[in-house]
Image (cartoon, rainbow, N blue to C red; front, side, top):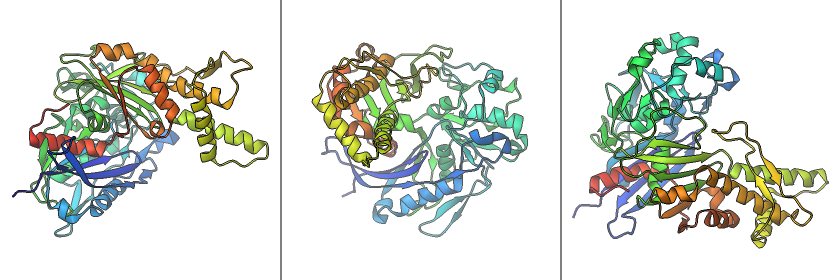
Length: 477
């Protein structure tokens, strides 16, 4: 009897790399089981290759990322790796690295061979801030519904074209870190990129599924560096070598964006929305079939539309203010007690304030928690209103802060809009939400739909699941 199908999912994140092995399990409610997984911190931060990038430059060492990936695979059971029938890859979006075609890596070892980067630049990540507002304003207007920001691949290439043209001349291929890994695994003559990652670079039209080639050529942009476009969920190629016991010839999926892979890992039905509250907050919902975004970008819009699967889009409200704001509040309380000559552990402060807020079900105190502004309202700041002598307790303030975080998200993507899109359930996930009963209560109050808590988003799982469902010919959510 043939063993159930196994897929490997990989996520190349900003700070860590994760790998997960999934096995088909028709008898299981989800249709799969996780056989094993491994996550490792990459610690790949590196000084910018161009001195002109200044302190705003954010780059990573590709060799360190690939080394961490190989370490993750080495930690997985060998007998399960030999059974892998498909590899799904996702990773941090927007970023860009460059390599020489045919020279981007070297394979070493025998049965458990690995690849090591060669003739490869640093990865300039999505966090890169070298493109100033004035520089971005000097760039041509894209033919796309998405704006171009610093840290976006095409903006970075424009900056290098002006400030480090010799670096660009050293390479003939470019992609995100996940596109690079797929190209190396398969020995691709040219990199391929899903529309999910292409849209994150800027200057990509999701309607025509094409780069803004003529606009870019008119500005002397090196369009030969732009990858070919392939469908997310499809196969980019097959492994050209045995890789950490995974057989040669194993299908490798077109690389996915980590946002889409994370949402896919949680979204059981097309009528689900996925809410993730960790450091920041994201609320994503599938758009109705046939939806097309406006053809021009609107930087002031609180909801952005990103390519998903099968020519559909995700409507995404992404708030910069989430668990990080709660962490700031905890730090402030801890600092105040230290100033008073008292020592209180951070964990104690957090647990006591949540306990106090859980007992304080209502408050008139209003906190607008935009300590970090928002992408669509960069100049917005936090405020506290309706202060009275009766609502200054720790319970009132913590309850108001948790409510404010959720209400801020609701103002960006209201419950009524979700209903209009056909959403029937919210899947709640994220570290800040999982350990905060008050945030859960406020989510249920703001979004009066069935809310399911407990399944965290996992891009590695999502990447593996896409390949697993493709193999089983299941209808994707």
